[in-house]
Image 1 (cartoon, rainbow, N blue to C red):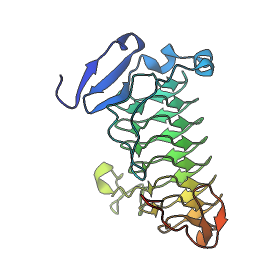
Image 2 (tube, helix red, strand yellow):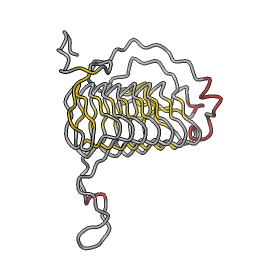
Image 3 (tube, one colour):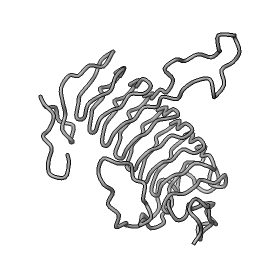
Image 4 (cartoon, rainbow, N blue to C red):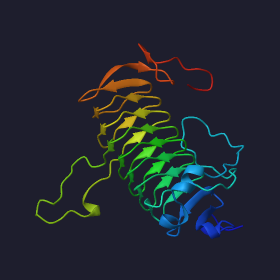
Length: 251
């Protein structure tokens, strides 16, 4: 057995797919051979067999232990750009013109729509849906089951400047990354803007076009500019006057 963190080749070598062994089996490093060569529209339309897994992730967390998963390739459109040092989970679909930067982690069974940008070190759980033209900037963390509507932006710099006071260009060490965290099952409506450092609670609902400037509680319904608490929703998205009562074992 290879030590943890060692990238090893597998029987999927002919697909240009790599495994992380043993701690991240089931997640694959994308290789340059995958991008633009292996897959085409016909492949994406027909899909690949997804093998069942006995693993059941604990709700409210980002899935980390995928060692029980059976190998099944993710799918990527040839126009997408996936960095060789990024990680994409089994069964995920990466559509036209997406860019996934180095050290980004995409969980299992995620869907990234056209022209999605995933920055360095972004972490995404499983079963997330990211719609067209979304920007997930460095420091963003999405737990399992998160929905982000089209044209939304999750920001990460509370004091954005191109230059320092002396007029020289700012570098990577001249600012502090303040990423957005979106908890389990939450939804972000289309064309929303989430300011740096905020946390969106479990099953919360952000209305379309909202500018979110502060943390959002679990099950909260917020919208407007700036976004304000306008009620609550249940796990199915139905509007309520108060947050749902906890059930045994959680919400």
